[in-house]
Amino acid sequence: MGRVRAQGAKNAALPAFAASLLTDKPVLLHRIPAISDVTTIIAMITALGKRVDALGGGTFRIENGGRLKREAPYELVRCMRASFFVIGPLLARLGEAIIPLPGGCTIGSRPVDLHLKGLRVMGAEIEQRQGIIHATAERLQGRSIYLDYPSVGATEDLIMAATLAAGETRISNPAGEPEVLDLIAMLQKMGAQIELSDSEIRVAGVKELTGAEHEIIPDRIEAGTYLLAAGITGGAVEVEGTITNHLTALIAKLQEAGIELQIKDESITASNEERSQAVDIETMPYPGFSTDLQAPMAAFLALARGKSMIKETVFESRFAYIAELIRLGADIQTIGRTANITGVEHLNGTQVRAADIRAGAALILAGLAAEGETQIEDAGHIDRGYTDIVNKLTALGAQIERR
Image (cartoon, rainbow, N blue to C red; front, side):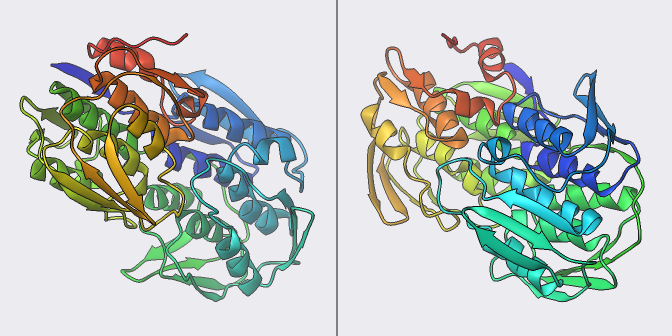
């Protein structure tokens, strides 16, 4: 049985770096994953006036490196949608932010409308010209904001903006993902006044925030990917350093599929000696089944016994990878946002292309189980979300190399 330790959560680390823009005092972040998206967000806040020092072991110190700038560089924002997180902190600190519309994975439109709608409610004036968002506000005002959808990005951006707003902001129908709660925990260490209830987040604005030291939570998506690797290959893997409560939906589906799990406080062991059983999946906001595990789950189900169904409710274009699984021999038919999977006995290695982070992870899983050699083009997408995945899988016994 192999062991692997979960990295720090990508989706918690990125807003944590953005939150450092809310203060001139030092911020110390631990358990930061060594992924290319982190490199991008560091370049972003550095361009905006921060100094970032890598202290080793996943620890970074962020300090004031000069006068804070209002305009985010296009060449960085176009690389990663999470770069848009800086609009809330910049608007709160400077009263102005100039941000190009973001890029990132090709999994759907993922509009930033909810971010902008919330900021407008807080008194910001926003203009959009030729793909550039120009937002201004003398000082953001605490207001009641209802999110039409519990967007993680919008929730985090508005929380950060509200920490320095005048008065109290109430965000109704917010996202409740662990990464959102991790950001709140960090902001509270910085002096933010934030309270949670079942249906809303309340933020009482303060005049300034201080520095803080914070450790990022484990990456539940990376952990889930390695558990699925054990399931699809008929092996056994112990994922250490996890928060098992963050994986409740995946755990339930793995058990339903016949995977044997040993669950401890900070580790999960998955083992599988027989062909798995088909299960149905519907992605939902947390605590539902994560959309980021949908593609790896599809690869796993491609070899399960029987017929499975995956319904994607979060992003409209997240099935682009399915054509690549079919090239490997999977039997999958899609209708709109639903994928019907008939499990096959084996897959055959061939050349495929990774269109985004999670699609790339799915193709790696399929390649591990396929007969013959699988070559994955555009594998750089995978490096945006997974630390050293080739060496980690090699240590678990996989035959995988980077060329």
